[in-house]
Length: 406
Ligand SMILES: Cc1cc2nc3c(=O)[nH]c(=O)nc-3n(C[C@H](O)[C@H](O)[C@H](O)COP(=O)(O)OP(=O)(O)OC[C@H]3O[C@@H](n4cnc5c(N)ncnc54)[C@H](O)[C@@H]3O)c2cc1C
Picture 1 (cartoon, rainbow, N blue to C red):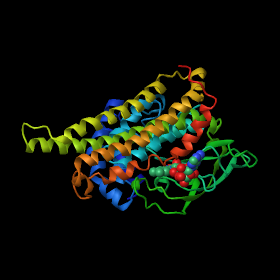
Picture 2 (cartoon, rainbow, N blue to C red; picture 1 turned 30 degrees about the vertical axis):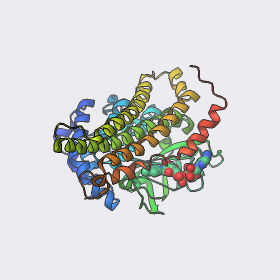
Picture 3 (cartoon, rainbow, N blue to C red; picture 1 turned 90 degrees about the vertical axis):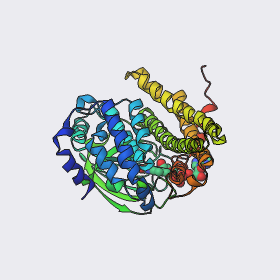
Picture 4 (spheres, rainbow, N blue to C red; picture 1 turned 180 degrees about the vertical axis):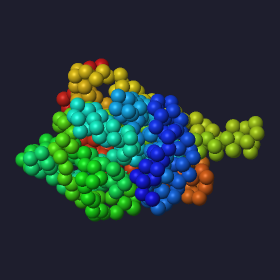
């Protein structure tokens, strides 16, 4: 059964049309993380297959509309709340959490930048109803990892467009109901004069061009694709990608990614805790030396959590007025997001590494309940997912002119 059909069947059940709030969503995600995602995570990883059981369960619990405003039927979760959902799911399966995070990022771009447009308002209502899954295509053959430049362009013909793109990496695009694609605004536009375009399943065809046999994040199913699409001009998100990137895509990406990397690291530390308590039970009245290591790694885990939580809370505290939104385009905020991304992406594999030193051989084995191989491999993707070197180079040029007001 296709995932969409399976979800449709689940959506037909009357009990899931009830209104949602954050606490009920979080309780559902906790259950899904422990009872569905964790159960299938090893197989998803081994086979590099899409975590369809988890996605079906998320759809059934109506988690895919968490980022949509309540006025359009969604839960209207804040960024802090979305981050809690992603970090909770990541404790069961990192790939599933990455899929959920990327979906939330795309939905937020539409909800925050397209809501004035009739087409997008109606699309968001449909997403609530059908629990559509949205993917992203920012990467492109020839632009390397630079999300802020495109080669492809929106070819306009009256009120219709044609958009074709060669993407190097397209997570779960083969399973998505829609994809948000970055592109040059039109044939004559400069490489960085970009827009975001929503293409729906019926609007596009995909030809897989590369494989996805990776170290980690295998369940995100992210090979390269040649995408061909056409649609109505109203599917172009209003405004520039420069704005939606700075004000939504970058903060949502870096905060949600950091939260899920933390969730993977937290699960690794939880396994280390189980191991240490087992040792303590074997030798009553003594504190095993690994307990000191556990205390040390707990500090790193807490520091990482404080980092993404405070960024999410500061984002949520900003009013939706023009002054606050301009703050999101400031150098100070851009540097903060870059710092968050670089520090959390480096912290996550280090924390898993320390957990592995505590657990020892039982963590090194693939077939042990305390296995940490998948956690290690998944978190190694963090520094590459928009290369830290690329981000550091951007921060370096900003720091040549930026003086911290504090
Ligand atoms: C799990 C996962 C899921 C992904 N999903 C998607 C998706 O759904 N859609 C999508 O569009 N993309 C996706 N991506 C792609 C991702 O966002 C990046 O575009 C991609 O990982 C960058 O590829 P790269 O390392 O070859 O590129 P680059 O950033 O060009 O890096 C290549 C090399 O150049 C170096 N480098 C680059 N810039 C500099 C610099 N200024 N100074 C010094 N060295 C530099 C880097 O360190 C690296 O060694 C995903 C990636 C991952 C890991």
